[in-house]
Length: 155
Length: 76
Image (tube, rainbow over all chains, first blue to last red; front, top):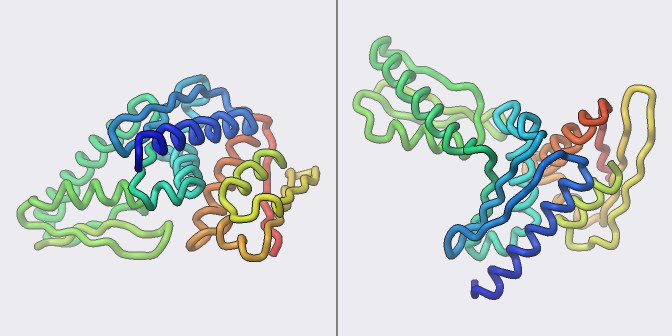
């Protein structure tokens, strides 16, 4: 993607997100930034952050998903579109890494498997990566679609 | 609600000009009926209904701001 294409798509995403906020009457402000040569970060602030981040950021993820689908051609060309608000992604990663660690301790101690609640692909990936080098346990995913969940087993 | 659904649907489909949404005010909920070109149904429903679910999440959140329950019906 050329810089010109990138600027272009960035402007289009900005317009789309502003329209979404407006038509949905969300009390949110969005900032759209190019954070590296292939990543656009959309970050939100405002009164409706609790609405955006409630239920494990269901609304933030829905907006991100719809935007990725709306710009599917650019995404297929390697564009990354990430939505975040109030440091949520980073905080969520730390929380998941802690949960992964606790699950690993529990599985090693009990020698029986532990299954997490269903999570999206992004969250499952963080759990898998966190336990990749962990001794005595291994991870797999089971179930389909929105019910897919990570299982931690004794290695 | 109708405009929100049309905005999202037009961004997803190949034939945005065929997107139509109608809004009905029920006693329990607002029902939004979405119609798209036949070939675009998959674009608004998505794999395992994931796109439709995301649209419903956005509609639900928007409705909750006005203390309204919103139901999306994708007309096939």
